[in-house]
Length: 150
Image (cartoon, rainbow, N blue to C red):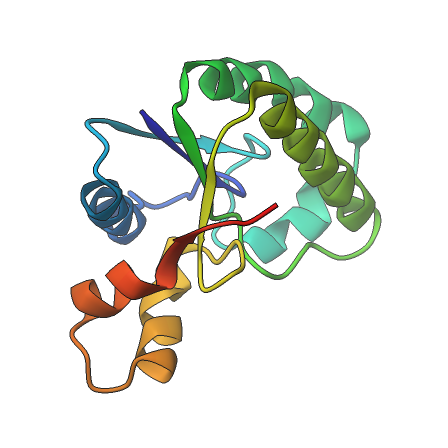
């Protein structure tokens, strides 16, 4: 099972993200994919966390579900985005990412990402268009989706 770690749930259906996550699953050759989030509070954009995720307890409350998902995973695809929230939420976000990295390391899971960073699936096409100009999205994503080296 490929575990995709996003930042937080959308307030929409998340259809575009889920479609791209499914593409990644196929490219990487996994039978199953699951999405889990650094924090369980839905926002329209992850930047909205700057206003609603200022308390550490909210972040800590998301760890058990994420930990369970990591335990079931065969590999992890980091896709929580490049821009952290601002203000107090930024500090908690960074702590959550550090905790996630420690958990991944303990479980010795392979880690994948797009273009050497934890880009969110909604940004994959922008990245691949700029990096692999003229190639079809699926072909470019196949090149951009790489295993992280430790």
